[in-house]
Amino acid sequence: MAGLRYLEDVITLQFDVAKCTGCQLCTQVCPHGVFAMDGSRAKVVDRGACMECGACALNCAFGAIEVQSGVGCAAAIIASYFRRGGEVSCGPDDTADAGSCGGLSGGCC
Amino acid sequence: MPGSKVTRPRLDQPFVIGSIDTLTGPVPLVPTELTWRDRRGGYRRRWGIGRYTHTVDPGLYAVGAPNDLSPVLVTANYKLTFDAVRRTLVGRDIWILVLDTRGINVWCAAGKGTFGTEELVSRVSSAGLAQIVSHGVLILPQLGATGVAAPEVRRRTGFRVVWGPVRATDLPAFLDSNMRATPEMRAVTFPLRDRLVLIPVEAANVLKLTLAVAAGAVVAGGMGPGWYSIARALERAPLGIAGALAAIVAGTVVTPALLPWIPCRMFAVKGATMGLIAALLIDVAFLGAGAPLSLAAAGVFAVVGSSFAAMNFTGTSTFTSLHGVEKEMRLVMPWQALGAVLAAGLWIAGGWY
Image 1 (cartoon, each protein chain N blue to C red):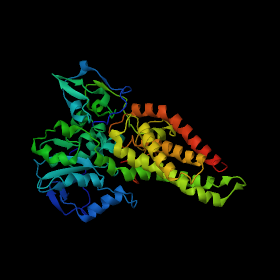
Image 2 (image 1 turned 90 degrees about the vertical axis):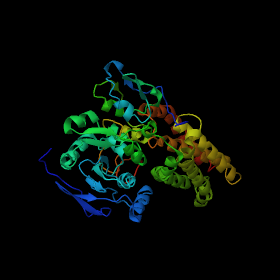
Image 3 (image 1 turned 90 degrees about the horizontal axis):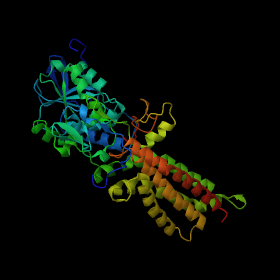
Image 4 (image 1 turned 180 degrees about the vertical axis):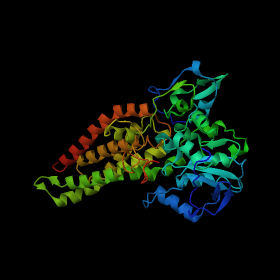
């Protein structure tokens, strides 16, 4: 991923090492190597690589990880401006052409 | 769970070559080789030809001659994903559990929650999986973790989730090493090949907008002394169309291809840089053929349009965060809006001067 890093200072990832039990799930699900094991507990080793996908927080059974997750997608953010609630996601519902993509008729996915 | 109704995918789907008898009835058997028909469907889907849905029935499938000890791979019901998984399983006996992601790939579907805990729990139940395998293990693609909470799946189904590799091509190595993933298998990358494959999709996404801008430029190009002249519109049309084309090529082809090597982390700035080069090229090409203001308009539009198109590539990329993109948009969108107004003003003024 040399040359492929993004804006790092706004990442919302929070890790509470005191709640970590060392199950290692976060190190397995993170697609960018943000976590690594440090002895019997996890440690954030590359916070700036976080893309806020939320996989780690969802899979931490002990609530040690918090992140305001969402998709890093300009088209989805623009679509959210025009939507009630304004949540940022790939296509707000199951209709093909609502939102930016993720529908059955094309889009980024 | 046990006792609930078991449902099976249809046996008459074109890629099904037979069935395996189980205690819960026949399970469709699929080959590991793709046919020309599978491949044609993939190309059509990628280039947006035809609007048919590219899905497989959700539920349990068999590869080879699996038994109660054979591994269970979980995947999405996007046909390209399903094909990418089964073609790696040459010579193996394996179950494939397909979730209903409405024809969307694993990562996008996980982000939406359709490749999610609820769907997995109910699919394990409706496939009667507990009566088919005895090992209690589900192998999931790592990128499904955005939608699936492994601890909750364990609690609700008794099945333990093992996070498999990111890429289907690593499945053989993963399965052969006692389900251990190397750091390379866990890492999402974004190599040139992946970026190039996505170019048609990117271009198609902004094609309508580009055509609208080009048409608008051609129509507006007729304005000038004497109010309106079709001859003038036609005379200026090539430059207007060139500006729109420069923007789409710079923003959706050049910027994605050269992404890691263009300076600055913000995609919009990368796109503007490539747009500037494109602007210089078309201005040189049209030097003498267009008025200075018109040349400036086409150039400014190439920069702004490329910047906007490149900004939209954040969603296609594999490493941008929500809050990063929000920050980028806050910083660049006022300038993009200003540039768009400037380009339009210069273009209209170019009819007079």
